Length: 67
Image 1 (cartoon, one colour):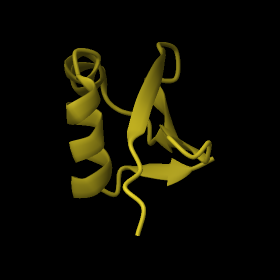
Image 2 (cartoon, one colour):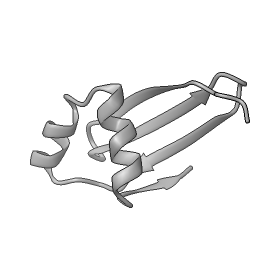
Image 3 (cartoon, one colour):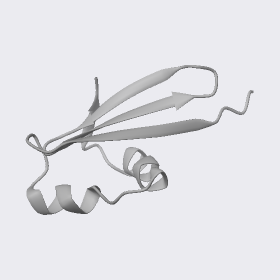
């Protein structure tokens, strides 16, 4: 089994209060997720997330879908 590294890039959509999360693996594989719309308080809080916070978000919740 190969040990792949992953990077995450996140873009906020202020008007829809959603985030688009792009995961890229070291072998070139990419996957894109979008969060479900959030209330303003949640959205403001999530804007400060680090890459590790987003990795945890993807592991611990179902508040997103694959695009």
